[in-house]
Length: 296
Image (cartoon, rainbow, N blue to C red; front, top):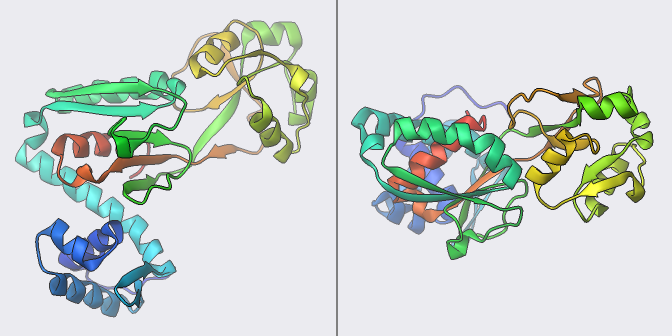
């Protein structure tokens, strides 16, 4: 979408962001500790300056337009950056203490979160991070965790969800496996190989079918619902595994296959509850994860 060249008023941007995330002018006013008419004037002024309609008004309800959704993605990044700048400038990050729990799949937790937590320890040493390594969707509304990294968008309206750049998955195999079974040159060659996957292979088979790759359930010779166990079975030479690309550091004896094949991508969502607005420690961890996951 081509936006008009305008000088943004940060108060207008904050009003729009709060309205989008809170769902109403009155809730946005409470979040920003101002009045509903003030929020309404700021949002209307932003619409006027941009020459677009950001919300359709139906009685007391607001429905975001497609232009509003386009703007929201950029504004969220601005809001996160402003929050980080404010915390760094005030030295707040080193003063904040307390527990923050993060849930992610076990493979993601082991391969990606560890280096992020190491940097977070330097930036905010008072924060204690509890990692819930689980492949099931933890319920943030029941406080099973404070922050979740997911591959599907949550449907609970009281959560704050931000979609980051799509992640990439690749085919992994160990050098021992390739020496025994040979190296596939195309995705069609995968029909002759052995795979490692989850115990229920239905989703994996459908995924491969969508890519034009036909494999059978019998090709999955070692299976587990644990991503870490699957990774170790792959390293032992038991089969080919599909796994996230840049979330795991380089490991000797493990190779990625079919680099010329069409990319395998999957969505990444970072989700939290509305305490993000009042809890500095959750905000610090949330922002660190966004930055590490490539949220800009």
